[in-house]
Length: 82
Length: 231
Image (cartoon, rainbow over all chains, first blue to last red; front, top):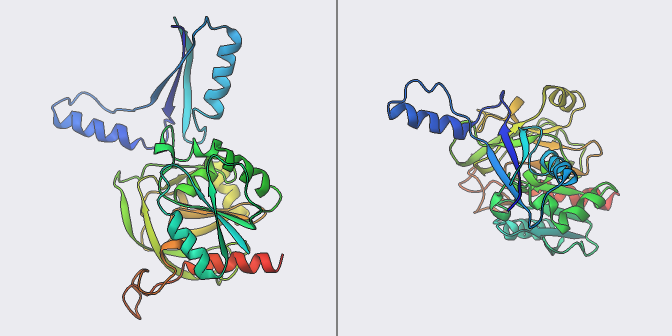
């Protein structure tokens, strides 16, 4: 099934409490070399037909307007997976 | 006067908000998330709790709901709108107010009576307060950290749009201790703490006078009635 993947990350200069909590747990488990963890979202848009350039354009638009909030997040990648 | 109180899937405080509206002396009209008809209300309250599981981001899906789209249209024409907690998050996601709300800096849900300073009284929802008045109303949230870009923050401060600021310690890491905001016109106000839980003696925050006697929240709802009468 063709899908468009939209990846969203919290902005680099904002605190990511989820990533921080996971980093703390990893450190407790002995993973001392992992300096930091940041956690974002991978959103899959599934299609029942082949996707085209206009679908990708639409996904980029949705990524910027609805799937992310540009005050707190960045869309870091939008791509097609077949 | 008719004040609409919106219920989304997951809203918790709609009944408290409705009670606050009644105690202030207005008629309550229950509004449903899937219904774009605002039933000719004079003002709208978006209450707290959660909405649509708070999936994607708090308030993000609610911001797309039929009732919210209509509220956005009417707010542009001056309809008074108050967003409380999740309702504030909905207002931000619907772009009626700028910025965003992220998980509390300390990563814990917080629930306590919170002291605030009223920073702006030229709004539909704060005109019965004194400028600089210190009030106490409950705060209860997991994602109440207010953030905005540096430019946006400077604009909010410069134009006096910060309406409430946390006192006696910042409970969630909000930039500039911001607890609540207004829009340029003053008809839209959003805040994280809960005025609707401080409207009736016996059920509000403790005060020096007596336990649970705090009713500072009632003035939000009396303010909107005052604004509507004088409109």
